[in-house]
Amino acid sequence: MPGQSIYVEQDEKFQGSSPQWWYEQFWHEARPSRIKRRRWIAGIGAVAGLLLSVRFGLMPVLTVPLGAAVAAGGDLLFVWWDHESTAVWRGKRRGEIRTGKLLRRALRRRGYNVLDGRAVPGEPSIDHLVIGPGGVWIVDNEAWGPDIYIARYGDRLFFDEKYGSAFAKGLTDAAAAMAERLSRESGIEVTVQPILAVHGGKLFTPHGPRGLVVAEGLALAYPRVVSRIILGTGEASYDEKDVELLTRTAARILRRVF
Image (cartoon, rainbow, N blue to C red):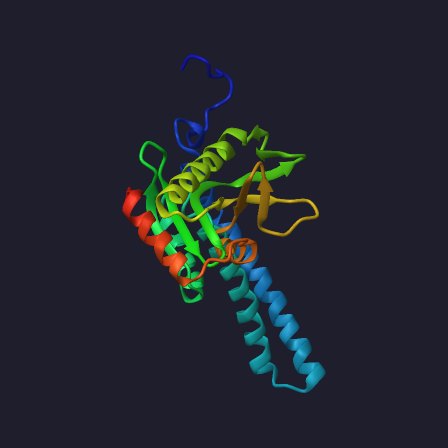
């Protein structure tokens, strides 16, 4: 093929396939090494169980297999969790469904309403609109590969070595447009805060809170952290009637996408 070396045999894994496909191939190919590692871990657990039996006078016939099982089970759980964290990026799960469930589970009992798939006419759609006593937020979802670092350096947002300014501006502009429309239609002064739920990737903040990056007016967090951000950053003091009015107004004026 043109552009290929005539001396080095081409690896089929790297020909015309997506990063997700490569990830799956490498993950399956690594299964024998994972099993080998798990056997070593189980052996270490068995030794730990034996030492515990000697130290506390327990029955080795129980502590040795129990130690091995706990150690191997812990490794199996870690491997499953690591693979499952890429499910949205791999297309096996939908990020907006996962985040929507987490938001409702954490916020509804605290007086917050969650509207899915809303957009100001003429503007890009937003996955979730959250309205509650503390204010109004838009929450969007995005997935990255497991090796992508998302970080703030200075005042700028970065995705690995690429600037994230355009990405952040899109969400901050959408928040401003939604705030202007809601304020005008409801008669209540509204400020909308944008949040991005990050599926996959590695959020990196030196000397900052784990699992949260704040840069260029945008908060980026893992899905399970988003509800805590909403509960912790609310600056408004809406009563129940205000929340109801804003929710009804949003449902009436904002275009539903899904």
